[in-house]
Image (tube, rainbow, N blue to C red):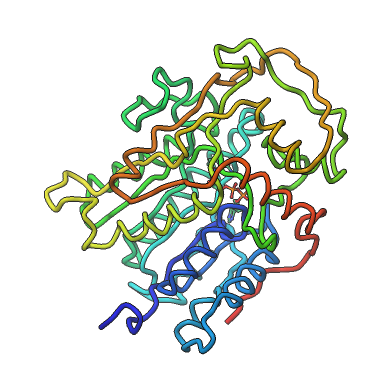
Length: 382
Ligand SMILES: NC(=O)c1ccc[n+]([C@@H]2O[C@H](COP(=O)([O-])OP(=O)(O)OC[C@H]3O[C@@H](n4cnc5c(N)ncnc54)[C@H](O)[C@@H]3O)[C@@H](O)[C@H]2O)c1
């Protein structure tokens, strides 16, 4: 049976309506091999994101789409909370045992600073709910999972660019929840080879789909630099409030260096990771001790805070005012990935440059100055 006539594989994406989730769903739909099920509790997202993804995917269908093509652009969207096991179980029950081929587990709380203030919420959502999800997966014979990890698992890394072999040692409760998530998956895969898990350590995703239909729409003031700069240029945040934390780091211009990659390059990495969970994939030789691996998803190129501000100035034409203040506790001078393992084993690449990221971010922000700007409940679309 050719892949075009095989039934679509059901993939559950947790946190599917969020920034990264919506772009991953778009990339999954583009393959026409998957039917996406999304679980999100709308804590940091709006269901309009999923409507837009479907719209975008439908607009890219061939002139005479098959029923299968059409089905691949639908999303079964459920408003459910991962911290409520019954709600997740109810979703799995709809598809039955073996009905969900794999899971991309993205849903999490993600603000480093906030995690130091409300650590229990972070451990509950990011760790306890992950355990509960894995138990439910097991009950329904679903043993393939791609996990959203983060560069923060490296804490202050001794080697730049950072290889995956670096000891994991995070500096915040958020980072520790990600190490715990990876540890749980690793232990699970060692305990039983029916489990296959890939952990993807994201560096700094940025930008938006070039259509401007989907993008990042954080609740409240953005915690990350690029969306903050976009909000400033569009007038959602006061221009006087930009603070640069420290310019005396051992980096070329003294400000912190991060590894930015285009959101669509990151999202494509998830399709590759999902493919690598197939039994025919060469990522896991059959004599492997376990089927668990972690990969860096980054560009492998560091960019400083001042370079980011300059790139956004070029993209937006906006005159950013900033103030250099002292170092912020917990900031690390340089977090640049060594992505060569993911390139070699998954076929991953992040070709898009900073200019493209800023251009697409600005396109999204100007077309959607108030984000998705609609309040409605997610509904099952099929
Ligand atoms: N954005 C980044 O810079 C970055 C970097 C490294 C890692 N990550 C990780 O990537 C993942 C996604 O990040 P994002 O930027 O898309 O964040 P996001 O907040 O846009 O997406 C997370 C989604 O999960 C949902 N969610 C949260 N708690 C939930 C719960 N209990 N039940 C159901 N849904 C819930 C939110 O509503 C949101 O839609 C997270 O795991 C994050 O830790 C993000």
